Image (cartoon, rainbow, N blue to C red; front, side, top):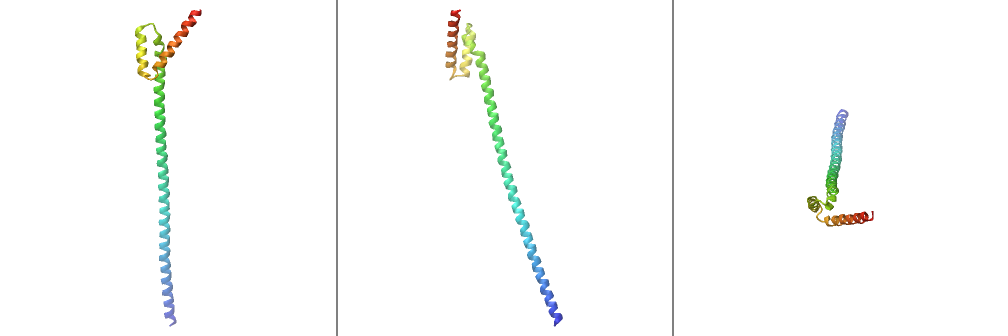
Length: 132
């Protein structure tokens, strides 16, 4: 009976080892899956962060392009003002009318103020010239 008992004990131990091995394999598999899930979540969070940064960068680039466009328009309008405002006081009728048309087209809301300032400067020049 001793051999039989030893065989039974050996079988029980072998069965226990097999069960422990199965449990260990399951725990290891679960740990790997959990680690993979955590890694997937980290990748998703990083991907979203990168996408947010990309969108922020595109927005900033768009704002910069818009600002550059507005600066270019403003510079061209200022150049036109520098070139045509003196012609408003010209004695040449064609130059004077051309300047008024161009400035009225470029500055429909402000042109009246510009013309008034030009006339004021002209009046001061005449007054100053009369003193000499």
